[in-house]
Amino acid sequence: MKVHILLGPPGSGKGTQAKRLVEKFNLNHLSTGDILRDAVSKETEIGRMAKAIMASGKLVDDDTVNGLVFARLQQGFEGDVLFDGYPRTLQQAKALGEFLSTQMIGLGNVVNIAVPDGVLEARVVGRRVCSNNDCGAIYHVESKPPKQDGICDLCGSPLKHRSDDTAEAFRSRMADFNASFQPLLGFYEHQPHYRSVDGNLAPEQVFESLVQLFPESA
Image 1 (cartoon, helix red, strand yellow):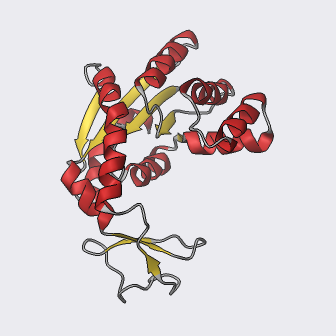
Image 2 (cartoon, one colour):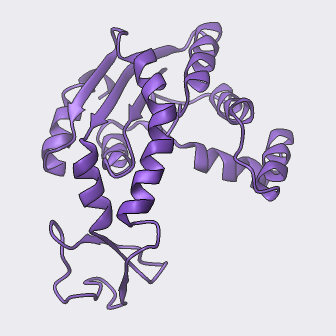
């Protein structure tokens, strides 16, 4: 078993590309959100700790996130694992490296989907989301407009512009993101298994670039 890591800023399409890679190469898809929800629902010891932290309105700390991830990895998998959204900080990356070493688990590809901030901002500000939570279809006013303005093609519900999809909110999020992401990127980018792909391309082109890095996982 190897662990692969997909990195990228908000709006890079990382989540969509992760799902496609998982399907093509039969990888085990792990996100910290899914792991956290699973631990809370099962009321594991660390799940109860995380639930208490979230109930207090605080972000789950690195040690707790690491504990959740490591506990899940220790359960074992058939085949390789793809992390989407983890690690998020330098501390998490270092702890993960130490854990993988002690467990004799290999680190495979670490790939960053690189997109300029200006492009990311345009993607986020132009995003529209179906107001029907059961549908959740995503559109863009320029690159993927609905057939009828303001109406979801799939279910006919009104589209909404989320309050955090404004230029001001995006710039604030990116400042916070980069404060953690740049040290994380610096940790990985000089290692032999690190690669960066151009995320400022059509989604299909980005996917093809990623596929070229994962042939050994097929």
